[in-house]
Amino acid sequence: MHGRAGLELRGRARVNALAARHPASPVPHALRGRSETRPGRTCPLAYRYEPRVLDRAPEIEAETVYVVGGLYGNVEALDVLRSMAAAERGPVRLVFNGDFHWFDVDPDDFARIDGEVLEHCALRGNVETEIAGEDSGAGCGCAYPVDVSDAEVGRSNEILERLRGTARMFPELRERFAALPMHRVARVGDARIGIVHGDASSLAGWGFARDRLDDPAHRRWIESAFRDARVDVFASSHTCLPALRRFATDAGGGIVANNGAAGMPNFAGTGFGLATRISVHPLASALHGLEVAGVHVQAVPIDYDAARWRERFLAQWPAGSAAHASYFRRIVEGPRLALADGAPRDAAAA
Image (cartoon, rainbow, N blue to C red; front, side, top):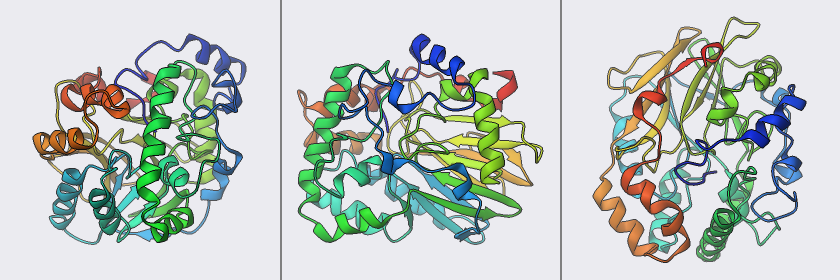
């Protein structure tokens, strides 16, 4: 997960230099921080998997699937998602692919999020993984890259610890979080979809971040992940800024869809979250999209009550708190990403 508004928009010269020396894989997690053991920087071994684990029979089949990453405890966004799903024609599934908790330290909000999310298909993100147990040494479990400040990382660790305090009131839910999978496979029409929280090899991976998707040195690893997983679409979240890219694959093309955040604005001057909608039926109100295997992969706005959400956030995270320092400006103004810069494109044209 996450980070502040400009997290992926600042230069990553050091990261790209490392990637150039390891073109067949994402930047090694151990090299993304000054010390791989520091809380918030580390990527635990238990978070890792191989792309080939997604080469299996689908657990989800529907005409339309909404992949909802980074809800972050936004109750208002959850209300809108329910209405969006109800308006669909044909079988529809909501899939919450991690970090549905984050700002919801109020016990009533925490319980409400779980009461609805766990009725649907869900994956655990690093947030749910870390609040499922006591301190593992991973902090927030974000595996933040080197260009994120220590202060930023420290605040995320503070948020996680406070949220864990709320989770301790719900021991049965913590057991359910621990049992949630790290990935799912879905079939929509003729398309196979690998649903993850981070990337194709780690629950907290940054391999599907905007800058990594547009890095030519990283392309070979992404294309190999499509081949090993045998999917047409990777749907992810975690890095908190949206991206929609098409890559060349042996099967003719594959799409990486990162919805950014369902519970926060994703573009400057906007007040809506985003979900990834994958369907045999196109949606006219979608922000934008691509097609693969006869299926529409679209970014759809979640137009929640932004004023009410700000009030709820401030009641739990007032000025001076860790979450307020890291996120309130984005919640009010959106990140430093123009709407036009969110348009989908072929990776070769990046």
